[in-house]
View 1 (cartoon, rainbow, N blue to C red):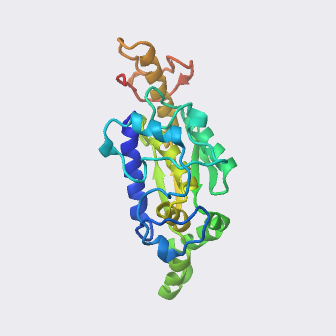
View 2 (cartoon, rainbow, N blue to C red; view 1 turned 90 degrees about the horizontal axis):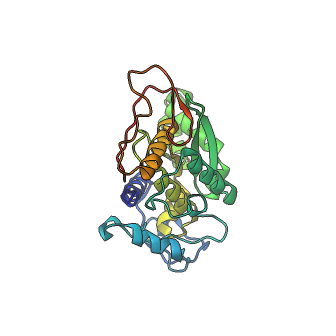
Length: 284
């Protein structure tokens, strides 16, 4: 579970790499206008004038096993009076020991974010074979969110240059005004445990943090997140994890033998599996 902090580092580093410019530090007040040029030279680190969530920040440092896993981007959590942190759903910070949330809990938090700030929008992108929902979560500034559909149309034109008759001048004009979409996915494989909670916290940080470093991402990139790509397998992994907590000295049962054609019942929730994989996990 402690690996979540490392996951956050990697995700934020990758996100910055995809941003139109590298970001650096400023000392503007929250909400104070800052030009693109100033944002483009901002350093990573918190905005001194923005309060932090003291309790959450304390637990980040308590639960992180080595200080070198932290960075100026994630060694604090900015506070918000209106936007809830992952603790509202999880009961503790993202990545806390002993808590592995089901996909529904992850999705509930993303929807809570969307209700709390205009910088987040949730899309239902389909259901799995077993009927679990999959989500796409967009995070960006209010200005970018207001023109999501127009931006989508612009990017579609760039994706198919036949629509602009292979005109480089038109392509350049579209590229100047369109915001890139950076797509992050978590739990592509069911035993990749840390990504969903890391992405819950990442979405919060991108929506709430007023540091120039994060603002430059939020104002120039539309971040699209699917926190759980494989909800069926994820939920079975959580089943096995919870079972192992109650039976620490026993080997968890398979969710389903790979050679079997019959459904089996989850060891903790009673839900029925008709999948074709075998899931095993060791205790954490």
